[in-house]
View (tube, rainbow, N blue to C red):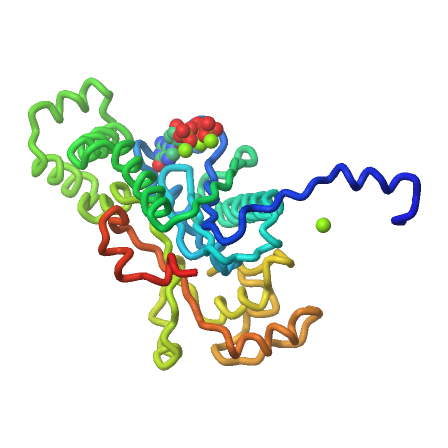
Length: 323
Ligand code: DGT
Ligand code: MG
Ligand code: MG
Ligand code: MG
Ligand code: MG
């Protein structure tokens, strides 16, 4: 009770608001993923399954947190951009940071077996997180350029990445020793490495390289109402159906446990078709959100592997930085 002699301890809990009217960037990073990737046999230098799992968790987070406009991921990290005017949890720093970090982590674990069917989780992964407050569009552009440039730096130049990819394929898939792999590749030009990858290992380097070079860019896009019923060209696992998006919208961040597409749709929505009414279930916010839904702009989230350093990406999507 408020009036007890114990209640004063509450006064030690200090408010931690984030500056109003500023962009919030939340960056999560896998804790000790050097060890985690080793213990779970991640392919070197890039494990496509691991990156796809990261994308999946990030996408789920964007479905849960509607004020995230953009996310960028590479390696074991993801950065999330909240719109400037977000009032999520009254902009309480710890509340936003801890909720997003734990939600992302849960999604990573929840979907692990979908991407690593033959590799049981040996121990619980964790992610650290921070929130950085930025005042201007320029700073946001520069922040994301910095992260994408880091991807390129880490993966070195395309040519270097090609060398690494071929080198590790020769060892991991071709059974060569490191010495033999070095010998195989000595003096080879790019075309030869492409040929080795494709003919011996069935790897089309040009297809996989965009992701590895550019990282993952997840954007929130507005859905044009007229074409909204055609939104089902979207394919699992990286795209969401309309009912899943609506589902997630109905379940605000105040109550977590929302769906995670495409395989972990909560039981109450599993047999739903597009346009079906929500079945009755015990959800105090349901009525209110049903009314609100009508006035809300439909959005969807999409994964790209494109350049975000130049102007083109941003000019085509002014809504990402508006408001
Ligand atoms: P931290 O973040 O300070 O707790 O420590 P780490 O070990 O997570 O270091 P960090 O975040 O700087 O580097 C990411 C590590 O994750 C790096 O050692 C390589 C590993 N990693 C990330 N993606 C892949 C991948 O696709 N394949 C492999 N083999 N390793 C990866
Ligand atoms: Mg870290
Ligand atoms: Mg890390
Ligand atoms: Mg990292
Ligand atoms: Mg509580």
